[in-house]
Picture (tube, rainbow, N blue to C red):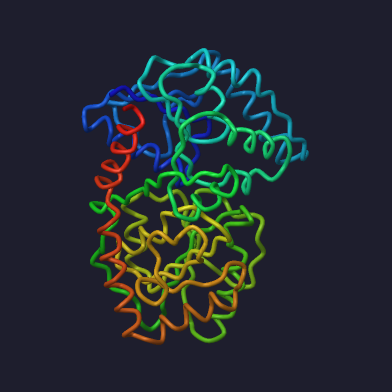
Length: 360
């Protein structure tokens, strides 16, 4: 089968990881795969040499426009979008394919207008929650009305989209590379426990809540706080000291998970976030919020689940794990069992089955 994946934003995010692993896996299974984008390599995650890169027409101009738009958004609070130029460039650059897959609502317009292959949106989040400013929010919500095929990555997202478009969409859960994300033989410091969290300047990622929770924890136990991420954290003033590690490789990240006593995932809402599952695969107890983790997180069995935007609950859950060896060990074992159900190969199997049904 011939696949084209259309992706405008190639940032170091979970969504980018999922799409790149999907392209790599399909190419490995013998499909012809192309990535259409205006972003030239290198990418934040390794793309197989078997995947063809199709740079859109006038990609240098598009790249410059993107940088200007980001600067206007970030520093002057002016949300300027010239979607006609973007859409025209992408639409005219689409290759022939059997299936044309978009990553976001913004991608949905050119994959639909190009008339190249069956247009499909693999939805990884309710983007209307992410793009809260106009005109982005309106563009995303309009994309939900396009007559294209859709499927989602989580139970949470299916419920949200059912309310918006009136249909239950198929679910294709992503997977984790268990060859990389596995328990590393690293001695865990019992006298000074290590608490690990993903840090992001995006407010709804909940990092501010984690810092407040960490301050509560530090009053009760001498803990080491380690934060990882891809962006510099400049927006948060913390009452506590923490170590920040930047741009880790997958192996380095798996090693960090394995060295932790607890991994905390404090987002207000996600749609199948990878860090909790990656940490489970490394044999580390997890504290996470509910929204978006329903596919794999079970409170008291393989993780402790807390309400979002609640630092006190986060701190209480972390202290439960640190003070109860039996609970910690049970969460570790069940987390490993859970991760084994969400492999990259099972992800590819589910994806191929959904696409074959659409093509027929």
